[in-house]
Amino acid sequence: MELLQDGRSRTSSGNVLNVNGSVLQTEPHVELKQDGDDRKVGLGKKVTLLRGIAIIIGTIIGAGIFISPKGILKHSGSVGMSLIVWIACGVLSLFGALSYAELGTSIKKSGGHYTYIMETFGPQMAFIRLWVDLIAIRPAAMAVISLAFGQYILEPLFMPCHIPPMAIKLTTAIGITSIMYLNSMSVTWTARIQIVLTCSKLLAIAIIIVPGMYQLFKGETRNFENAFELSNVKLSGMPLAFYSGMYAYAGWFYLNFVTEEVENPERTVPLAICISMAIVTTCYVLTNVAYYTVMSAEELLASDAVAVTFAEKLMGKFSIAVPVFVALSCYGSMNGGTFALSRMFYVASREGQLPEVLSMVHIRRHTPLAAVLILYPMTILQLFVGDIYSLLNFMSFLRWLFIGVVVLGLIYHRYTKPDLPRPFKVPLFIPVVFCLTCFFMVFLSLYSDPVNTGIGFAISLTGIPAYYMFIKFNRRPKWLQRALDDYLLLNPEPDQDP
Image 1 (tube, rainbow, N blue to C red):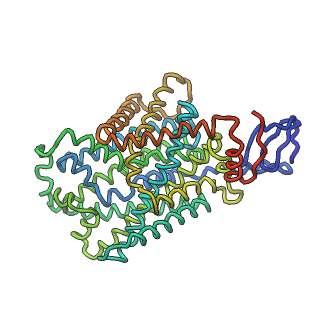
Image 2: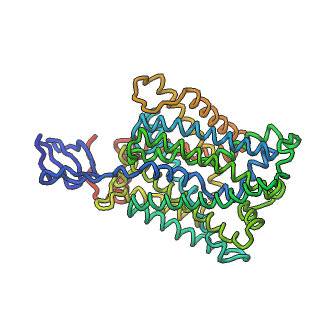
Image 3: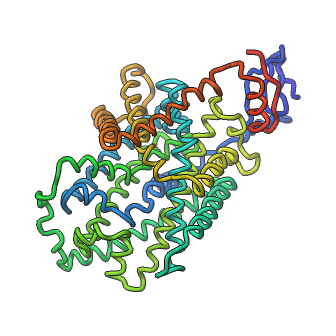
C-alpha cells in the first residue's frame, strides 16, 4: 500500500482509499507511481490518418461487393436504378459518417454508439445497447464474416469439389483465434496489418475495375442499353434496395470507437471519414459498372459469386486468385471490427457497466487484453452451435434503431448544449436527413418482417432486467456477488457498504 500526501492511500490493485478506508477511485489500468515516476500504463495515440482510413475502409469493404451485389439489382428493377441506389446509399452513409465526425470531435471519448447514448440518454439506454452487442449482435456478425473467410480461403484448395462444412468451421476458428492474438499482442502491428489488408482489398477491386473500364471504353455497352427501363421498377422494392445498400456501406462508424487513440482527433476523424467514404463509394459504383460491362442483369442475378463469375469471363485461370482476395477482405473486416469493438467494452468497463478487469491494459504491450478476448468464447460458440444468420435477421433493425437514436442525440445536443465545443460542425439538415433514413429502415423492418423483428426487440428488452440485476442494485444477493467476483475479477475485494 502506498501512502499519498493528503492522507489517502493507494492499494496494490490501484484503488485509492480515503482516510476512513472507503474506496474513492479505481484505476486498474494505471501503473503505480514510484520514485517520482509519473508514467502511466494506458492506450496510446497510435491511430494516424492513414491508419484511421485503413480502419474505416478495411471494415466497410467485406465480402459483399465481391460476392453478391444482386440484392440491390433485384429490388431496384434495372441496371440504371441499381447504380443510382449505390450512389444514394453512399451519400446517405456519408451523412451518417459526418454526423458521427461531429460527435467524435465534441465528445472525445472512445466507445462509439455506447458512449454517445450514455452521454445523451443515460446509463440504462447505453447498457441495453451494450447488452445486445455483447450477447448477440457482435458475436453473430463476427461469426458470419469469419465463415466467409473460411470458405473463400479454402475454395482454391478444393476446386471444383464441395468444401466440407467442418473444414470451413475449423479454418474459421483458426482465423478468429489469429485475429484475437494479433489484437492482444500489439496495437501498432494490428494497425500495420490493417493497412496491408486494406491495400489488398483495394487491389482486388482495382483488378475488377480496370479491366471493366477497358471493356467499357472498347464499346461494351450493350448491357447499359435501356438501363433505366421502368417496366420492372416497383416502388415497393426500392426501400428494400436502399436497405441492402446501407448494409453494404455499414462500418463507417468504427473510427469513433477508438477516438481516444487517434492523433489530433479534431482533424483526423473528419478527414479520415470523408476520404474513406469517397473512396468506398467510388469503388462500389465503378465495381458495379465493371460487372455490367461483362454480365447482363440476368447473369448477375444468377451468379452466387459475382466477382468470380466476372474473373472467369475475362481472366481465365487467374480467376482462382479472386477467392483469396475475398478471404483477405473478410480478414481485414474481422481485424478492424475486433480492434474497434474491444474499445467499446474497455470504455463500458471504465464506466462501471462491465467487470473491472476489462478496463485493464497490459503493462508491456499496452493493449486492452481482456476487452479484446471477451467476444472470443461467444463467437466460437455461435460458430459451432448457433443459428447465426437467423440471429442477424433478428438484430438487423436494432443496428439502425440505435444509430438513429445516436444521431437524434446530436440534434438534441444542438439545442440543449449550444456552447459545447464543436471543432467540426455539419449543417443541421445532414443529421436530420440521416436520422429520418434510419427510422424509416426500422419501420421497414417492422413492416416487412414483423416476427423476426419482434424476436430481436424481445432479446434487446432482456437488457432491462440485466441492468437492474448487475448494475442498479447496490445490494446484490451474496451468491451472485460471490460468483461475479470469483469469475470476473482477478483479485476480488470485500463488498463495500453503499
